Length: 296
Image 1 (cartoon, rainbow, N blue to C red):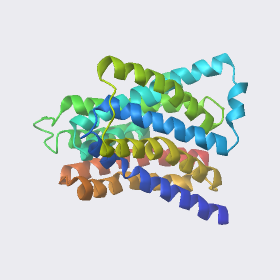
Image 2 (image 1 turned 90 degrees about the horizontal axis):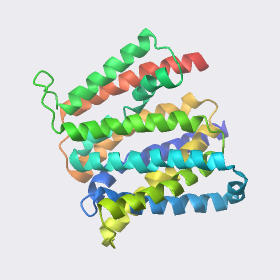
Image 3 (image 1 turned 135 degrees about the vertical axis):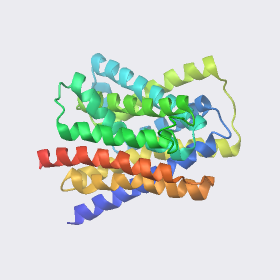
């Protein structure tokens, strides 16, 4: 029981931190472009993960990996952090936080779709209903409730936000096939990803010394969104009796995020955003219930 209480503690800490990142993205993008933000935050995250590995005495394990495993990390590093966060930060630069965050949150639904060709999984009626319900929510958010008019507030931004869900689903599928230590894998992903991000920044942006607000914002994102929070969530999953006991907390993130967006960014939260988010979560929960029933 003590372990379960600690699992809840770690899970709640992770959820509270994740709830702040949408606002952190929008605030920091006022001082840096999306590539500059990604370069600094990825650098900070890589250092953070290295410190965590050192404290856990796991740095030596890096020397034991084969060339094939390093190449696998190089591929995953291209997906995340490089491609995933480029698309995500660009989406946040084009959309209100209340739109970008829920659209990015559709990755479990994208996971269902990608599992069909990649994992040869069959889709039943419940999965089809889950997909339709969630994408109806996407349509409500993207059109701000004007579904019949089919008028998007920013079609390209919505496309990018949904693309991040696809990239994350790809990353999740291929990452779960890799049985190496999770923190070590993530460090290597960011180490390789940092190289790609540096090249992209040199090619399409410029290296700058950010002002204090930009540096603090990017560092916050690097430490918490990309680094420590992952470790907290992994710890919660390890200590919990079942994954389902802590996974339910993740559904609080988008709603808490909207509250923070309202108070920190001053965005007026639209009814269409809340309604659309409810539809997205209903679809995700429908699919998760199926998985939990199957597993337990």
